[in-house]
Length: 323
Image (cartoon, rainbow, N blue to C red; front, side):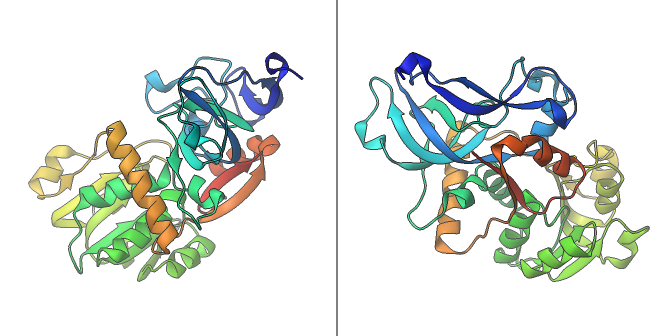
């Protein structure tokens, strides 16, 4: 087979809709162009926002992808091909990489040679894949929250990909972590990660059992996020990072100001900041001080099941696709 005839396994979205529109197929796999590399993917990250994009309802209109579209913005694997002008030392390197928003749900991904980040020795590639998006997000949120020793920190979706990392990082920062999640199974996981207090937000009036907190990491939004916001006292910080409930919480900024509560919404990191945060997450995982929680490893051909489980809130930790 010559280069023009090479094919690779991939998942393609040809029209917006439910998980069933994720179509396993084969696509042409041309060699990497000048300044690019090809990665043999061993694990692809799946994110909640990709389920929204697949449905044609991304959180921001400009994120609506052009079709046909191969989802996936994070992969881990080995560099197997180099384009012209690329340092030969990259060949065979174990790396993680963002893809620019598409192309990750595939057995082979092509990216610019400046994109891959080396995976530290001793860290498995699936663990590294679990940290591409979630590790970067969690480390940025922790920095923005400026947690003080002994502060009470409430983490929503505490058994999710980002939430499970926030529980660990907040605890390392000296916080008393209050883990909020839906159901005993998820709360047990949060407890094992170091949460000091547990609260089930699937129960009515769940906030009545929680003492005031200093920081809220809101990964759910909607009514749950608004209820958690009400737990903040003077000097508190509210950091929304997701809308698993369907929409971000309706926070009254003027009321927040009157209560001396800061609504902290970090903007998107620069490429350099993003890379540094991923590197920090990988280094911490390699050192054993941060553990990515991988709840589901599914074959690439079962991408539809991965999306269905995420939308049904059945997942714990990170979901990965394995070509």
